[in-house]
Amino acid sequence: MTGHPQSSQTRADPDPTGSVPRQVGADPHPADPVGSGDDDPALHLGDVEVARYVVRPDLDPRHGPRPYLHPVRTLAGIPVTDAFPADHVWHLGASLAVQDVDGTNLWGGRTYVRGTGYTWRDDHGVIAHTQWRERTPDRLAHTLQWRDRAGGVLLTEHRRLAATPVTADAWALDVDYTLTAPAGRDVPLGSPATNGRPGGAGYGGFFWRAVAEGEPTAFTMDADGEQAANGSAARWVALTGVAPGGGAYTLVFTGLGLGDRWFVRTAMYPGVCVAFAFDRPAVVPAGGRRTGQHRVLVADGVRDRSGVTALLAAAESA
Image 1 (cartoon, one colour):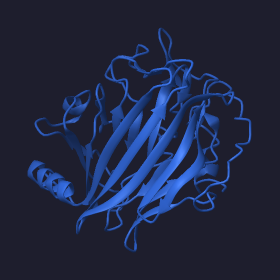
Image 2: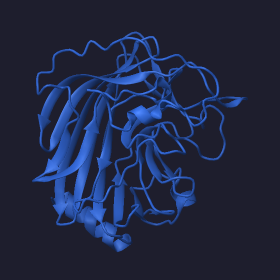
Image 3: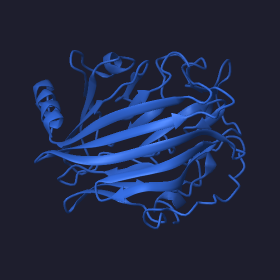
């Protein structure tokens, strides 16, 4: 695979401060037991492709190479993810990404350094697909390695993605994963916030870069707006917007784990993240595991609170 068609456009960073060497080392890519493993599979509901999964993107290492979902679409075909946006080129659709994994940047972009601020550093690793476990039209499962810049394994991951119909104009994406640390050491997880950045910048975890014409709207069960949602532990966060070219959508995010918080942006860019280390570092203990189970409801049209509540009820019974 040669990567996402846009990947060739990402070689020139919009802020190429500093010098970071090209990632070196060919991935052995063990034989995949299910399918060829060389293409970018898609999730389908019936005849409708609702998401494309870019498994082995060919990217500048500073952009945090990792598998990602893009484009994700509503059942009517409205795109609800963005990749390689000019404001943050390393935002890649929907993906798992953490800026500080025991000192390795697996988010992309500059690293926030306490007392210094954002700095280009030679600290970028890669989240690499290693083996397929399942590939069906509505379900994908595989094994990955979270690696440092030298190729050392920081974490091993088992990930599952599944698409489920909810209503005639909505579907659910389920993202389940287990991260396992090596037997001999703890693996700390951090964020710009835990490394000293003020302003609620505790991003890093399961991150969804949305696409919107103008500023979208975010709300929870009992609060409105970015500031109220950001840093909260609400049961769900909804994001409503209009895609470029028209087409309204609603995204509903659920599935915070113990200690997780929502990272939400609407003014600077549209994005929602299940943040692992919003205001304090998290740790995957030596030989231990961290699990996550997140669901995103992808719906056509704009839903208010009552509409989101009805959508969640329909998803639970689907």
